Length: 276
Image 1 (tube, one colour):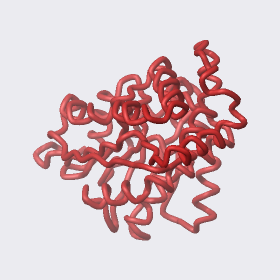
Image 2 (tube, helix red, strand yellow; image 1 turned 180 degrees about the horizontal axis):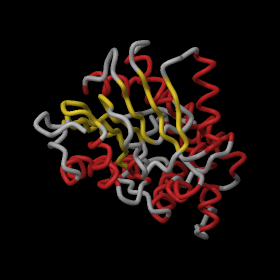
Image 3 (tube, helix red, strand yellow; image 1 turned 180 degrees about the vertical axis):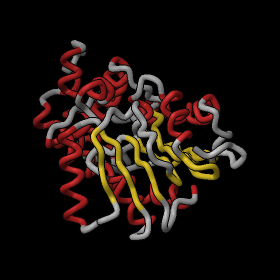
């Protein structure tokens, strides 16, 4: 996400460093997303729409699930991210994935899909209900809508024993919220699905622990926004040494670092609706 009207949706930017951070983050959460997609019924031969593809990790995961007889279309607003995603797909030898550059709030309506999916995208959109409503119209009756989103509330609470980690968590949440992101989109999914005209979704929650590099990477990508909002950055100290100081704090406390919870919600489009 990034250019045109999508630019205001994603506060972490589209630098090379942010792309690398997204790839690392995707590796940590891939097992949870794969299990979630399988539970939602995504499998061989299906056509899947991936909303807010970033540098392509969710689309590539879905492509492996649907196999060579299936197809994945990724929608991404940022041109640099689309270029990176296409290069990664080619390097991985996946021939069933394509990407279009488009504002992610403008759902392509010229195709019909077996599933519409996304991860960490609705939290950044100004009207997620409208986007889900539009998505449901391009999913065939009986098809799946499946999204994973975060909850930061327990993350902040569990960070308290680690002062530097907690300072980073607090600044991260404030920056996201000031930029318009919903840091509690995960728990909101149950209601948002129904407001969008979908059935009450199946929801489960995953707890991630121990990704010590994650905090510093997110804060580095958010730094320009923190300065824009004139937030007090003194508790973090120098960004260049922040990863080492965070790791030292964790090692000294013998603690496991908390991460935001992942909520996964999926529902099937009712079969009694008319197909386009």
